[in-house]
Amino acid sequence: MKAATASTNHTRKAIFDQLFASYLGPAFAIQTWDGWLWNSSQNKSPDCTIVFRTPGALRHLFFDPNEWSLGQAFIDGDLDVQGDLVEAFHIAEHIFNQPVSFKNRQLQKIGAIFLGIQQRLNRGTEHSQSRDRRSIAFHYDQPAEFYLPWLGPSLVYSCAYFHHDHDCLDIAQENKMDHICRKLRLKPEERFLDIGCGWGSLILHAASRYQAIAHGITLSKMQAATAIERICHADLQNRCFVELRDYRALAGAREIFDKIASVGMFEHVGHKMLPLYFRIAHSALKRGGVFLNHGIARANSKQPRKLSFINRYVFPDGELVPISKTLQVAEQAGFEVRDVENLREHYAKTLRLWVKSLEEHAEATIHYAPKSIYRTWKLYMAGSAAAFERGDLGLYQILLSRPEHGKSYMPLTRADWYDALS
Image (cartoon, rainbow, N blue to C red; front, side, top):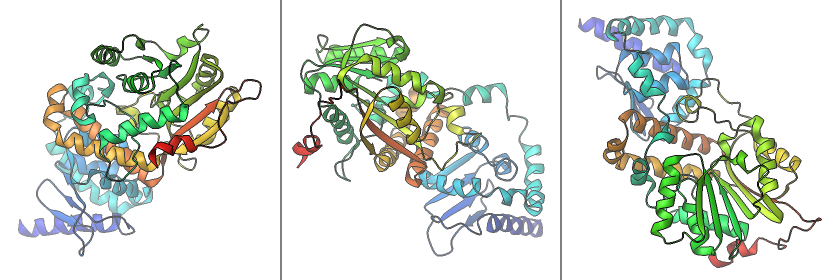
């Protein structure tokens, strides 16, 4: 028996030595369901430990190494990470980028050992109806109480803006909303539209700090109800309004706005709908007005994965396009591009803080949503943080103008955006 165990452990070591022979990232460890441990470095302490709690989870690594299979294993608790979850995604990227390793006959033969164990122990639970139902519960269905513990009182679910590295999340979100209003040069009594207003944080900020007449639209009944409640609590019913409305319903509307913003909604529009999206925003904006579009773009060199975890479990119809394509479509709709700012590092930091806060408030969030939803959010945000850190994704604020006979009505410099900060 001891000889068999020693032989199995030797085989395991050979697998991981070969798989990570060219790996140059942070030190990590792998632990299997029976306590066996492998370290990527003998000289450094691991930043994280990847734990395979079942043979079935390890099987995915050899026969089906993609975001769907490994993500599903994490959601179900068959795969876990102890330590820095974001670093685990840099390790996964190494795996995804080396498909040849998994086609190697020796690895496939060794992997069959784990397949045999998995077939005996898995008991047919994979792809059961209850397991699949847990997997497809998308996070937008959760009540506001699920978000509040880890988003904080600002209830802002988009990239924060850090003036200083030590800024806490609440301060950084306040900075972001102020940054947007400053870029728009929002003035008292101006009509301001927030497309995809979430729980109403930006329109509340615009109305209370800049005395704008702020109008928000959202497709979420839960978000709209929470936003209206917050507006009433702030006694801003006379200048803050929220309604359930699709952005496409703005087409042909008589109401015209002085300033428009869209923050974190753009990712859901889709490549084919971008021309319509920008045309509608252009028609809803007065001549001489400006539109700030805040959204994620993928690097032009990075093609989207066919088996994307985010597309399957988080944003089923989301689509990210390169910033060059976004700017091209915006110009074709009649906009003039006035400013482009990439907040990539800010979003990586925001996501790391969200993951940390989510872990700290695990008990509170699980009270309002299943544990599988909690694990889906945790995995999605950690993976997104890693993608921003690698530069696979960017977060762009694009300031677009609708000139009036060539006049933009904008100052010569951006100095007023930052005067109060100096």
